[in-house]
Each structure stands twice: as C-alpha cells, then as structure tokens.
Amino acid sequence: MFKNLSNLANLGNIIKQAQEMGGRIKQLNEQMKNERAKGAAGGGLVEVEMNGLIEVLSVRIDPDLIARGDREMIEDLLPAAFNAAQRKAKQLHADAMRSMTGGLNIPGLDEALGELSKDEEKEPA
Image 1: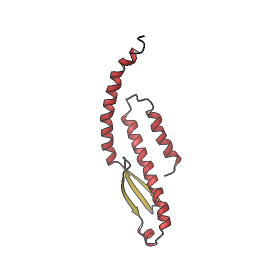
Image 2: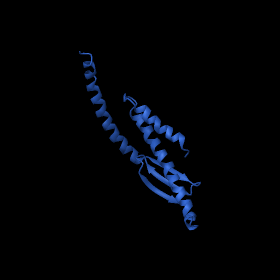
Image 3: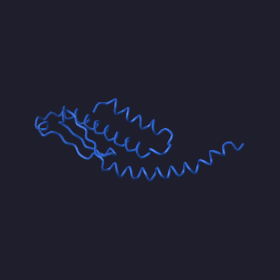
Image 4: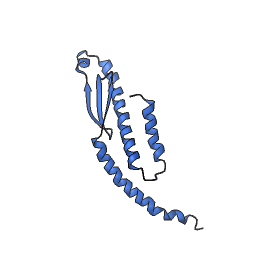
C-alpha cells in the first residue's frame, strides 16, 4: 500500500530541478540571442546569418548574381543557405542545452538532443 509513497519523496527533488531548469533556460535564451550561425550556398553567393534562437539576422546575395538576373538560381540558393544556417543554429542550441543540463537527470533529454545531432549529420552544410 505504501510502496508508491517513496516516489512522493522524490517529488520535492523533481520540483527543485524544474525550478533550476527554468532559470537556466532563461539564461540559455539570452545567451543564444548573441550566438551566430552562418549558412552559405552556391559557393558563398548567398549567405544567411541566424542567432542561436534560429531567428534570421541577415541575408546576403552576391550583387553579381542579382545583376545577372538569375532568379531561378537565387530561388534555389536561398533555401539551401537558410537550411544550412538553421542546422548550425540548432547544433549551437543543442550543445548549449547539453552543457546546461549536465548535472540534471531529465528523462529523454539526451535522446532528444541526439536527434538534433543526427539531423545535422544527415544534411551536409
């Protein structure tokens, strides 16, 4: 009857960990605003810069590409550059989460962060 009460004793620890995590996540988000990830396509003809929160900060298109009026190439290169920057930004975020949660036992976190790393490996930058 009282076997499950031992789980209640751990509830205080779980709540404490959750509160610590909330503070750390707030810190992480502030840090990620200042991190930068760049993606390029077409040998640098198109470049995209994002922060660690995966917010686009800038897009650069080579002026010669625009002067040539090669709309189709621009349309192909833009998504490739965005995706490359996004993968790098996600990796920055995953790495920061791993370091932030080093001492906390959060079920499933390593698996979730591992999936981000697998996505990074699947798609070449």
